[in-house]
Length: 392
Image 1 (cartoon, rainbow, N blue to C red):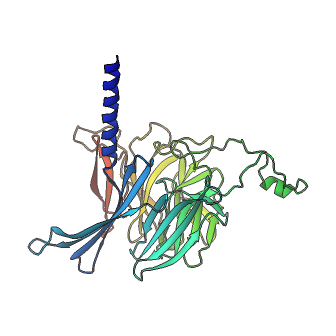
Image 2: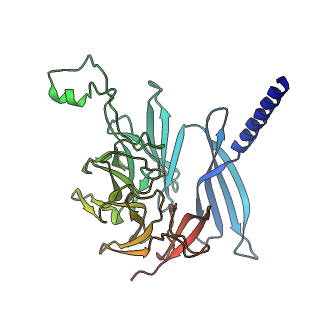
Image 3: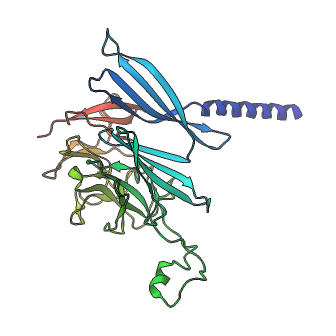
């Protein structure tokens, strides 16, 4: 019995050591390739992450490499230098480059010194051309909004086309509910309602499945010159904005509004949530529907020249992760057509199975505005492919 126990402990020890070795293997999270004017030299910047088992957290490293075209074969590049720098100063760092690669916006999340259970967030803007910090804005202290989300569906920082503003989705600011507040003026009805007194144990609906902190997200715009934050509060309360992006000429915001009622269900693994594609015009604060109601949409992207909008659409409800159709919209006329229909079943083993588990990279459009680079699962493998269409 003792010998069997010893062998079991040794086996567990080997598994632990094996997991520790595997956890140290870094995984690339994002990357960016920049070139000089003649394209001879390329600078590659990427963020790698690995799990620090002892610290019970992710360890991030930034790797910078420089390559150049070979003289004899301009299709091949040779590595000149590479260096790695650990990013361990902050709990969470989320960075987004502007469209012209001249600025970078960084979202930094820290623990509050006065209240370690609370988080503080800052958005820092850095000019890569002049090598100077443009601004560092405290997001949480003004209490205009809650924490900024960085999830694919509900979050991320989005640079405007003019590179003067940042679009993001954050939680709606709500005062912490207390069971009893001794400083509350009970004779002031307005302050009584704002205090949320008695709501400490009230159930707040959220989007679940690793999105438990997404309860009441709102669209926000930050001016990088003044640092001011504007909350777009004209969105109906029965909608949750997702997949938000800037419209052409920064005149508005396009997003998929998911219905909150009858209740919020999971989203991260469920591309069948019902809603409508909307366009919010900033000038007159009006909301316009771009698609029919009760559809499920994801993967919204404008072409480089901002003349076309693509997105993936399927019928709401039904099986999770069912295939979607690729739609194309001419932005000026708002005319929409189906480019690739839904594939219920492939015609053969090697036939096209349809768009399932599709991922759209940040810069997915080719310069000709006719090709899109996508990533999707195919026969239990994930691969990249190009989808070409001709718009008439």
